[in-house]
Length: 348
Image 1 (cartoon, rainbow, N blue to C red):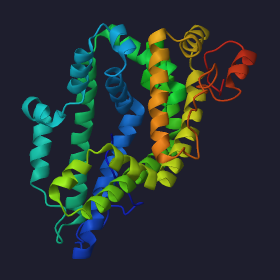
Image 2 (cartoon, one colour; image 1 turned 180 degrees about the vertical axis):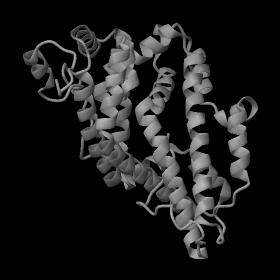
Image 3 (spheres, helix red, strand yellow; image 1 turned 90 degrees about the vertical axis):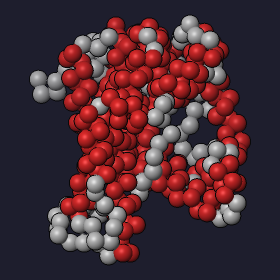
Image 4 (cartoon, helix red, strand yellow; image 1 turned 180 degrees about the horizontal axis):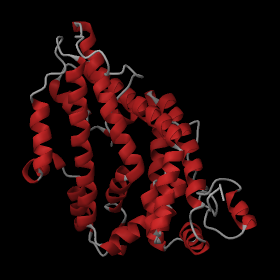
């Protein structure tokens, strides 16, 4: 689902004439990956790319959902594959800026012992720019693949599914027909929560790096090359790795819950009473296809829990779907008591 990184700051700025000793090359490679991954995770948290891709994937096994979208299962699978396609070859053929960045990056050799920090910094920056173009292309593919009506139903599902997910993102509320002023307020909220975003992104990156390192270590112990290839896609093998790094996942989930609750409260305050009521309707009384899809999600999650053991921190249980779950405790009542919205400027 995501890529992997680790290690706190070993800033690649400053003494650009200094070269790296041989035993520092791996640390430099790791730091480059860490910086690129942080940028990717931040972009994803704000735009919900992986959240949308997971829904696209989930639609393929939910008859109620793909029929609601007017698709057959084969069409749902085709749509899912289309939005998850590798964007690199597409951009190399269609985007001159992307191709230029790629060619410039290919000339650099940041992981040689005599590479300067300036080279490493330039390489990282080019990679980050490429990655952002790739993610924007992914969003474009999603909107080209699904019709506006299908996207509307997908976004409604994301809102109704808030109690089942690890975090929310501003774009999912656009289905509530936000005004330009409301969108501006959401941007301001992101700036307010910048320290919390950065903290959670660090937790996510460390978890994904741990996941990769654990996987690589286990595969390295396998002497048969064909068996190594097979295990990379073996469900039981992957789930055992998840079980091994459960403490790291619990830490990441706790960080995500804190960020999610703070983000939800601030974003809910932006909604007008009419938008708030519409959101509550989706949460409390969702359409039948959403109910069926959520119940299927729970069944699949319970199967994973039987392998991994239940997490020690936040995770929806089999009876957790009831009014109010997606809304932080007490907020619904506070909203009613505080009267009319939307949120006003605190300095007024």
